[in-house]
Image 1 (cartoon, helix red, strand yellow):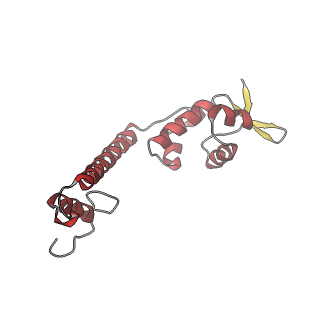
Image 2: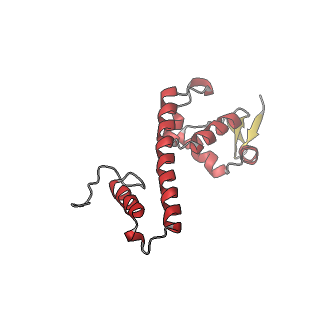
Image 3: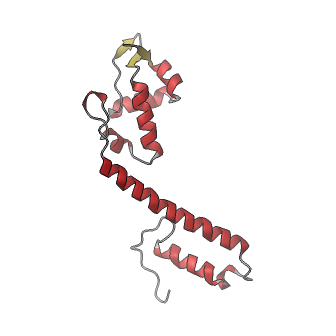
Length: 145
């Protein structure tokens, strides 16, 4: 089997050696030995790193990604976890779309003041309720809003 030292893995994957060492500490990848002071990896580590990159791009934490690997480096991807992440992304997309649309409206709004614009006021109420932005929906609106 082909062995790659940490510098080769870093060069081929585009992942810094420091990150590779961190991934090894977290148990996401495993070196198979050393050549001098350099860690050695099986060539299959590149596929594993690609799966980690895909998981990170989708928003999974490293701990969640670690759960996706079974014994002997075989992926063990929980389809329910994937579906839940897809739903989370859908919610994020809806919030970001609402924020984008609100910003576009505010930029082109013909009202003399944004506070006089009914659409802008609706956007403010949505932000206060947590419907858009990062606040939780459980935050109550002030009385009379």
